[in-house]
Image (tube, rainbow, N blue to C red; front, side):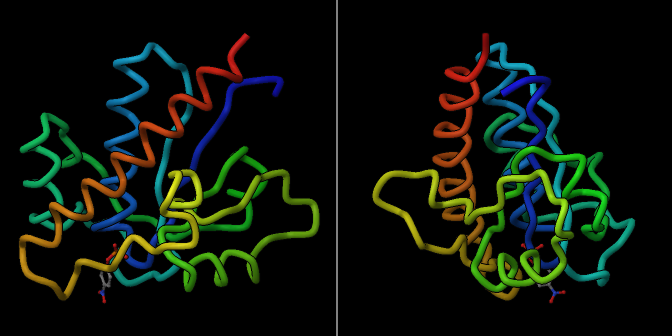
Length: 158
Ligand code: 4NP
């Protein structure tokens, strides 16, 4: 790959799963000294401009990661030209991204957990209507993916 990799995580609201994925990968890249652009977005416009859900902020904070400064935005066609890798948190959002992708998309588009051996094809379950405990499972899933991604990005470097 030439140029700096750029990774976008996409869920439905951009207030629970994808901000956690963004925070987990940011932390992993900082720890490993990997230089990558990271962002997240939602396929819906429901929470544009809002900070992450308080339960997501608390879960990240419990793992030493501050996502409170993030603000939700909706995915846009230009994202397919700006990002080298776009990962959907579940198959519904992957389908929405596929229908939005322009014909000149440069991005690799896939399901986030396809990066994690043994969890291919699986969704990061929507925790929004679940109890607080489900956010711990969300964090574990996005952290496993962040670890897999940082290893790939490190290998692509230089
Ligand atoms: P996310 O979670 O897609 O992980 O950000 C959701 C956030 C909000 C809603 C659904 C899922 N909602 O229905 O408003």
